[in-house]
Every structure is written in C-alpha cells, then in structure tokens.
Length: 163
Ligand SMILES: [Zn+2]
Image (cartoon, rainbow, N blue to C red; front, side):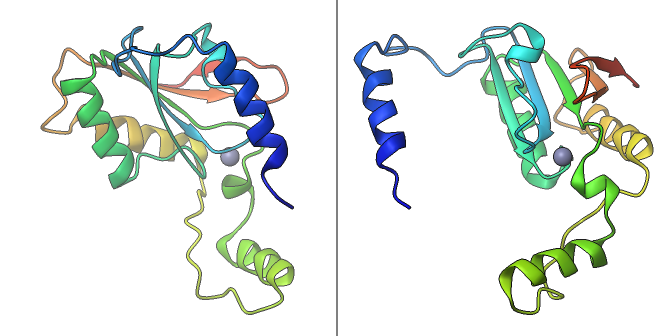
C-alpha cells in the first residue's frame, strides 16, 4: 500500500489552494479536545471551517499533559477563548478494559502487547468532569476562558453539555 491516491488528491487540493498567507490563530476563538475516532468531524459538527479552531485529538479525547500544552498555547498565543472537551458515545477506550485492548492488539500484532499502556476510562462522564476541572483550574488558563465538557453522540450527531 502506498500513498499515491492521497498524494494525487493533495495535488488537486493544492490546485485550488486558498489558505495561503493565512495566519495560524483560531478565527472562531475555539479549541477542541476530542477523540481520534473517525466518526467525529470536529469542525463540521460545530458549523466551523478550516482556520476557525485549534484541534487536539487522542484516544478518548482526554486532557493529557500534551493536550494541556496545546490549550495553554492556544489561549495565550492563538486567540482561543472557548475550549470544548468532547469525548463520545461508543468510544473504544471507554468500553473496553486495558486488558481487553491489550488482548485485541496482541491478537492483531501476533505478539505480546501486555506491556503497551492503553489508558482506559471507567466512567466517561466523571472523567470528563475531571478534565474540565483540570483546564479551568490550570494556573495559565485565565478565568475569562470558557471551558465546557460535552458528550458527542456518534449515532445522532448531537452534542450534550455535561459541564
Ligand atoms: Zn473514541
């Protein structure tokens, strides 16, 4: 498998490229932390477009130290004023145990995967509350920054605000 199809698509994209000379700030003042899940289209689900938002994705949509770095940079240097933390329904890291994920990955890899950490989420809404608190209470996130925690339903496309 090569990358030819993707590079061909990229040349078409570049032929009508209209983002040149664009700055890197979040034009809608929005940052989103969400899951890597391919069912999530972070910009479209909020009516946003390229250039509007800073987006940080990882398995589960957790506020990891790296996500926090991105948010602090976003708030201070990239015009972020609102932060949305968005885990989703039917997320693999919230519906499997770490042992189950290690077993599935090990079966796919054909080798032992029991050493690979897969941080899983036992209570998704409680974890979201902790993540929202982590951002709101961070010393480098000013009180003027709005921080919300939402659950995205991959079957309806709806966001439900939890925090
Ligand atoms: Zn997920």
